[in-house]
Image: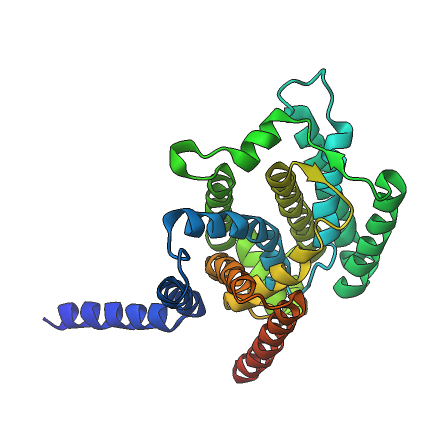
Length: 325
C-alpha cells in the first residue's frame, strides 16, 4: 500500500506542476479568450475564423521557434524580421522556370538564411559581441542590402510549391499549420530529448559552468543562431506563399511578436529556463489579441503598446523568478 500511495502522491505532484506551469496557463488563457470573444463578437468562434488565426500564428510560431532556442541560451536575435524579409524577397528573385517544382530555390534561400544565422553566432561566440548588438547590426545590414536589391518594388511569387504551402488546405488544415506542427515536434524533441538541448539550457543557466563541464559553448552558440536563421527563413517562405509577393519590410511585424510569444510561453528572457511548448500557445494568443484589437477598430499604436506592456510585465516577472532561483 505504501508503494501505491507514493505513486499516487508522485502523480499528484506532477499534475500540480503541469497545472501551475506557464505553458498550461497560456493555453488556459487562449481558451478563455476564445470562449469570451466567441460570445461577445459575432463570427469570432466560427471554425473558419479560428483556423485562420492558427494559420497566422504559424508564421509567428516558426520565427519564435529559433528565438526560443536563442533566448533559453541567454541571447536574443533581433535580426529575425530582416531574415524573414530576405527569404520572402529573395525567393522570387532566385526562382527559375528551369526548376518547375521550386524546391531548389527554397533550399537555396534556406541555406542563405541559415548562413546569416551562423554569422550571427560567430560574432557572438568568437568576437564576443553582445547578441543584441550583433543581431541588430546584421538586421541593419540586411535591410540596406534589400533596399539596394529590391528597391521599393514588390516581387511576385513564381514558385508553385511555395504557393501551395501558403494556400493549400489538405483535409481542411492549412499547409502552413501542418508545417508548424511538424517543426514543433522536431523542436520539442531536440530541446528536451537530446544532448544538444541539454547544452542549450546549461549555457543559458551559466555559460562559464557549462564550459567547465565540457560543453562546447562556441559551437553550440553558433548552431543555435543558425537554427534561428533557418526557422526565420521558413517563416519568410510561408509569408511569401500566403501573400503572393514579397517586399522590403514584410518581416517587420514578426520581431516583436516572436519575442512576445517566447516570454508569454514562460521562457525566461534571462536564459536557462523555458520550453517551446509554451511558445506555441503564446503565438496563438498574440494573434488572437491582434484580431480583437482589429475587431474593436483600435489603431496599430494600441497593439504596439499592448505588446510592449506584455513584454515589460513578463520581463519583471522573469527577473523575480530569476531572483528566487
